[in-house]
Length: 154
Length: 154
Image 1 (cartoon, rainbow over the protein chains, first blue to last red):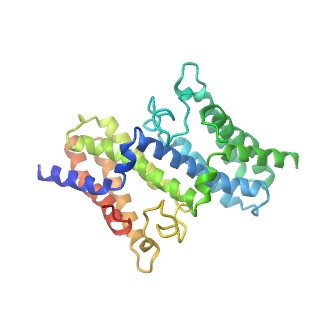
Image 2 (cartoon, rainbow over the protein chains, first blue to last red):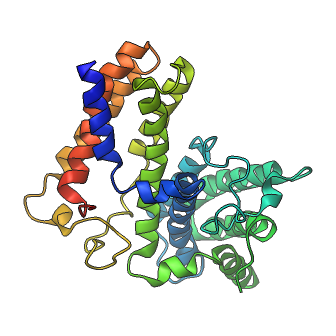
Image 3 (tube, rainbow over the protein chains, first blue to last red):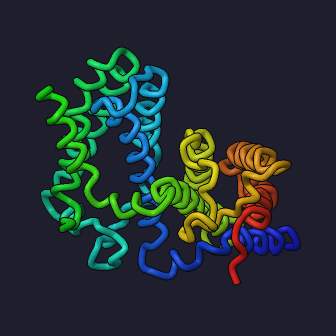
């Protein structure tokens, strides 16, 4: 039992500072998924900067950004989107309840994103033209989900 | 060029809603790393709940949580901790500048966490006693870094 109490005490210490996020409904799930979106945005910034010519093309950096995007696709997200964790339950989220509604095509949109990331992985390290060619579908896959399932920002 | 403009326009649409986080110094990096910490906290919640007996032991769920922790260890974090992205630059972060200071042992602490997660991956799916046995080191690795390198919460 001593080991159990020690583990519980250590968990309490480790968890300090995340209590606030846990207080709001689905706070931890929302924080996690928004953080993964921010991680993706950082990678998209690398790819987009090269695609637009703001940054010199760097095959290794582009490949790494594409690989990092894929790592977020394969990351298990099964705990991150519990039913009801939309904007109406917690305004910290911009997720619309339509994600979970009957007939929602969220699964198709997730598949489209995964396919676009796969295509970017094949293109990013090849050359700038290939990266640029893959960017349209990838940006479209991001935007397709955001437009359908995110609270509009004005 | 038309393709470039289209890609830029799509990126602009895809990026809507993340602009606010980008406005603050290192906002996107901080959001990403805090989200990954929240993701870890969700997995630790699964393992800790079983270790403490709050939740019945489930070998598959425990293994999945441990594997998910490892996925965050192997996720490339090289863009997430730029020099200067500490609490003094942006209060949204609780990261202390000591992380980047001369003589910082942040690398050792990251290694200790990776090793503790590796041990948990080997233990979590075996049985409850093994999970409990691995929890002390894992919680200690979380807390070791938090105590040394995070703004204390009072």
